[in-house]
Image (cartoon, rainbow, N blue to C red):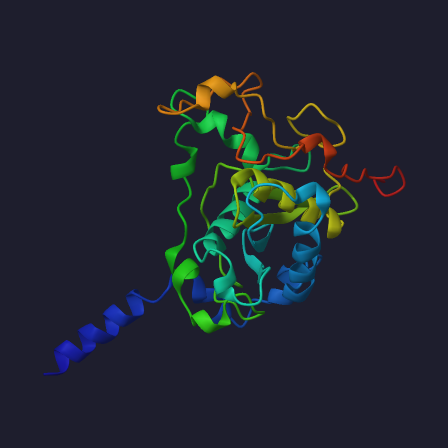
Amino acid sequence: MKAPKFVACVLTILSAPAGVAHATDASFDLKRACAGLPSVSVLRASLIAAANDPKALNGLQLLNWATVVNRDGIVCAVAFQGDDRGAQWPGSRVISAQKANTANAFSLNKLALSTANLFSAVQPGGSLFGLQESNPVNTGVAYGGDSRLIGTSNDPMVGGKIGGVNVFGGGLALYDGSGTIIGGVGVSGDTSCRDHFVAWELRHVLKLDYVPSGVSGDPNRPDNVIFDIPTSQVAAPSPVPGPSTSGFGHPKCINTGNPAALDPIRHVSIASSH
């Protein structure tokens, strides 16, 4: 009669969410791991400011989620824009984290790639086809914990590695004043185009936009979205993405804004680079 209880205990241990390791590891210091990155209160206030910036008032003008990860892909903060967690698309919480992880995972000190820059390359026949399947979301981190804590400093995702690869607009790498990458931010809750615009202004508000270089061709907006996919290629009834002239293009969305009007990045001063 004892064997079933033993088996049940083993199964319980093995089925525990993979992302809770940090919360129970005495050697893990979340404050240190997330140094230089915004708290949930700062992230929320900055998200609200960014989403209401006239340069980002396009798309459907829905409310957004924002997630920040550190350089190791550990979730440091999750915030929502509205009055409660149900005011935004619930599914966009995890998407925002996935976007943050992607931008961080595929950006470097010398080259930043936004999630919008990945769209064309991952299409069938593209040079990065299959990338979106390479780093799956950690479901234990994404869906575990008490839902009542979502969007607070104790959000169940905080302290865990979310994983995931997202390949449409809304994810950007974060760079400190020395031009060093320190993590990523993801925004989700509207069209993928507006998600990018809000994320861009959010990064600017956070003053973590000392971006080194990118693929957009604009030195003042290096990892900006590129709208160079011909409209005829994405028209109904049979949408076909591409070809993108640059290879890093993203399709336009409903009520698309002007990416050239977004705030320019900050540039690292000569003094701080030495």
